[in-house]
Length: 626
Image (tube, rainbow, N blue to C red):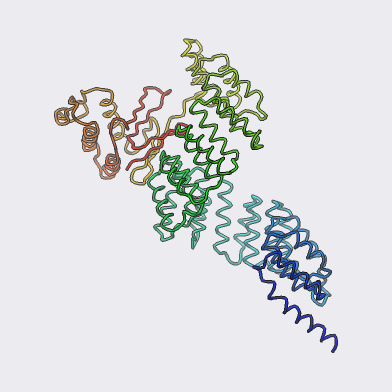
């Protein structure tokens, strides 16, 4: 009877302390309550220690949680699970496994209250195996879960599925998926994400289409998978389809699709996303604003990027770095430097990406002294070790300003092996400054790194031609022919009424090829000053459009001429619809018309009548219409 009274007394004390151990309690108050618990001789209460470990877990006080756990002589399964959960949340996966092993050792089937792993144990232990990328250990835990009767628990099965995917074992993941007692949205999302992670976008899309019920997480995973693997047009298609099926984007899905908008120059869609984010109260999310700034900058709207940057409530280092990089890529070197100085005054510590943008700005503008100063500042002022991107900017800067020998010396003294981009930059500088000796050195390195890149051969051939070394030109061309090399054709992406249209130099596979080339020929002739275009126009065209009169604007004449050609050549509705969308968006004012014409395989042909024209480093033309 007396023993029973003691138990009741302990239970009563536990009930007294329990309300003081809510999860919102801070660590300072927790320690005060702990002192009272020890005072009342309740330090071995698994019930109270479990609550205290949970509070430590919530506050990130894993060391204090470890201290509490180690003081327990006989922890129960609840305390074991709490400690396993806390270690997993803190990414201390090895500690999780060690506690799990201790739990197995302490499990005595003959005990009054035996300790066994349960459905609350295995999800975290399995996650730790995945975090360690330890497939063998994960398989052992899988066997344990089956042994203890948790084979058909959906949460545990999803954890196992995720573990196999993290370990890049899709075969076992598929087997697990097929054997699952019940598949939920998490199961499907995990497997789709696994295929995307390994670049198997087609298989991911096939599973996406099979999925009976898609959530916003599923749509976002598919969009993100496409953007990460370079399928930008497909990402936009999925984003549009998601909305057509009544699923409203959240801020995560907006971040997922914005890189595709940036790559395709889909400014109108990017603007809509900006409007949608503002309407739904998402613009307080810094990472979303950063993505919008990057999109605007890559689409050529650096002023809109600046306006958004200026309106941001909170800016992190990515915000500053993105804006500096955007200004640099648009030739606004002085503005980029001023913004960096403002960043310093704001006490925001720059990172490696910040200096890539800053050095790039100096490179584009030819600011040699500033570039060298900022390169040295990385180590001296911020303890940042320059990476290959920073050395690439430095080599490019030295080369552009004519310091070819110093650029070569910099490459030789780099702490890492120079890549093809650095040697290619040096070769390009050699062409500009007619330095054949260093060009040959750079070409030798490029032949090892990129033996099949025709562009390098063309560059060296041009250097020979510039110096009048025609034997060298002939040798390069013969070498290209012997290797069956052709220069990669230029390409462009044009946005017409929110639809991205792709064009490749010399492409004859486009279903509207005849119309496109007819318009190109007409506009090229007119831009070149030829008034006699009667061979491809109606007989009364010259009189109708007054080609010889300077009073008529190029915009009006070109629009009418193009519409007349369209009327003659577009003989089916589909073609007519395509060209009409193109013509309606054209802005053919003289200062905005870009014509790049060539007549052999060494040149790129691209005509884009645009409101904006952006040429990124890889020379892909990105434009937007209407």
